[in-house]
Amino acid sequence: MKIVVLLKQTPDTETKIKIDASGSAIDHADTKFIINPYDEFAIEEALQTKEKAGGTPEVVIMSFGDDKARELIIKGLAMGGDRGVLISNAGLETADSLTVAKVLAAAIKAEGASLVLCGRQAIDDDNMHVGTMAAELLSWPHVNVVTKMALNGEKVTVEREVEGGKVEVYEVGLPAVFGAHKSLNTPRYASLPGIMKAKKKPFETKSPADYGLNSADLKGKIKVAIKSFEYPPAKPAGKLFQGEEIEVMVEKVVKLLREEAKII
Image (cartoon, rainbow, N blue to C red; front, side, top):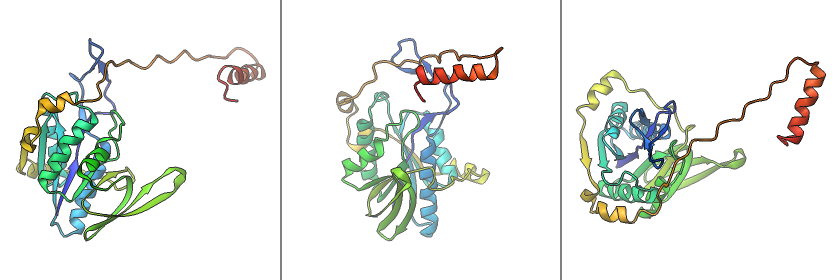
């Protein structure tokens, strides 16, 4: 059995995002990248699944990105992954979700994986597209926002959160794709021995061509393009009430809440 974990590099949540001079792209010159947090839950679940199965499944940490993703894959190996695969996005830096899913689906198929784990969504664009699209391209079942998971032979029983605080339970036959929610587990830290071992673990750098895909053809079929970015509008200055009786100030606040904010 082989488990593939899809990893995406995303800006650190504390990074100050800068728009470049053209206004059509993000300036990542000073951006610190991290593993998409939801993907860490996917890595942890893969490792726990391997441990419960007696250590036999191979856990492959895979990403489609640039060289910055290399260190993040290695972090996944330090947590306990067995092998890393970086698929270069050279020439496809502006690829949309479907294009990324096409590349990853081809790589998953080539790996012969039977279980694929990813985060429920990426924290940068919040699209929640790639895992579902990859599953559809593979004609595999997919369950997202998974909060509990148990492997039983060739079937996986999962729970997922839905609106209203209710839980859905699915029994899914493998191969399949699952999107991890933050309540699925608690990701482990990479130990010092794990960090040292990670540097010696197998690591492959691939291109779409290695999976029979032509980058120029993929680029020509990108269906979504970002035309421009804008910073959020500045928050209006707040109104300060002082120097009057409490009753008077409260009356003014209530009036504004009713007539301007229209929340009461």
